[in-house]
Image (cartoon, rainbow, N blue to C red; front, side, top):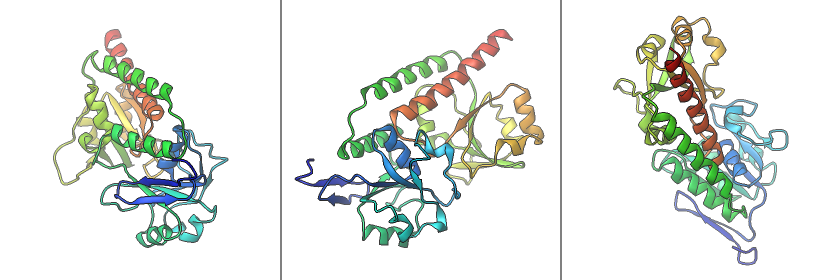
Length: 297
């Protein structure tokens, strides 16, 4: 819309945000801010969730110019005054269902919305990763971003390459988040849009045993070894146990000694074609490496 007719956007709660002019000072949850950056929208500030710390998580920040974009903190460090410090004219948040703003205390989110438009994009299981990417692209266009046909071409090329790599033979792929040297959280692939997208391209994702966890199965590292992964998609966010802390873990060491490949995975993916293409390319590289090793063996 033109500035003369105002700006409006209907978010995934069904709420319509309005402004007299197209917002230009965007504050966003870091996942949303990094996604919008890929789509051509600059965020002036970003904030984290209760899982984050005093510094921005590099696993979530993508190609955001961290030195130029203010990071306002996370969790209890966030209140309305802190969030409004940079005088944003739009806040972009995410939700995992039910319209609840992820990363902010409900009262903080409520009072924030009384002072500035808040757009919430659902990044949960209610839609595919492609569907979520389309919603962010729609928001980016409303904020004045241009179409990025090369990014779409990059994604299609990455999809084709991964489909080819997956067709070269079954490779056992396990996605997990290291909890500590004693256990890990093994992802249930169908519950994660990015993992479901891998499955659609033929990647052999391994389901953990049935159990009480909806998104994760809590397993000992011995149980992880029983899954016999050839590729481990491993959570590298700051709230996951760092891989360095697992060096003395015998089952982890045995997996690496057996040639299991570790691919960094962010369970809060950037929902842009460029970011998704990067991830698909990493997985394709790993599958190709496994196939090469099997041929050489």
